[in-house]
Image 1 (cartoon, rainbow, N blue to C red):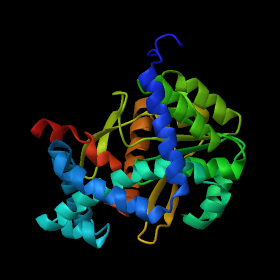
Image 2 (image 1 turned 180 degrees about the horizontal axis):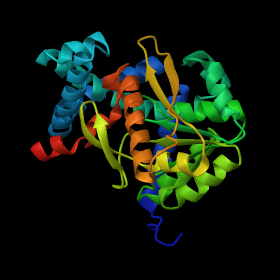
Image 3 (image 1 turned 30 degrees about the horizontal axis):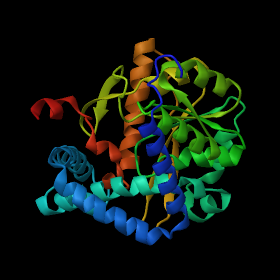
Image 4 (image 1 turned 60 degrees about the vertical axis):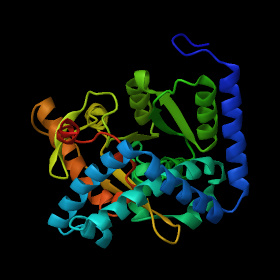
Length: 318
């Protein structure tokens, strides 16, 4: 057992095996009935989780009103800005897509080059591939939008090298080991947050692709910038990594349309060249937030972060 990690237990081994068995079964069943089951689970979850429902409604209210004010987003999102029933439908859809996300994770082992070719549509694919093959490395900043891991899987498939991704370590060591093994088969190299900075810096200097999630301040060391019209702390890691290595970050968003096709879009967000360290980091995060807004506008109900604290003022009001 690694120092500081919880001990392996029989219950933990059983849980990991059950998760593995569920994934094996999900990979061999057709997707439509699995998604129908996920939709049913999402509707039940919506009714049984009042606190989660209230937070999602509060967060989506802010998103939809901002989108409507700026003439952005889907028709459903703009309608939800002024119609309570439409907002409730959007919240229910958020629960559905959250449940679907776990089905997608279970089916992750089926993702190969043929799957990506059929189900993953990249806008401006040539520009993305150019970034991936930059000898200085590729730094992609994703957000918790739809099946966000697809961006890292795509990067690994196109480069033939693992995409290095920092990840929280869960308290269940057997399940953690299972996640590491399965993600490694997809071409992802998970690294613990505690030592991620050095590993990520070395990976970029070796010309590898690095994927970060930037829309939630998980570690508590974020910097507040305006997001959808109100201050929100964003993780400073992408900015610090860009400043350290000189690599231009690309914000990458993924969302799924009604036909089942996933769409991916990357947007370069250059790191500012002038100003103090704090000023440059803040200006970068402000530009990153604008990119987040544009990505989320495509499918706000698929932004999984709405179930978590985003804006301190909304949490204080709660």
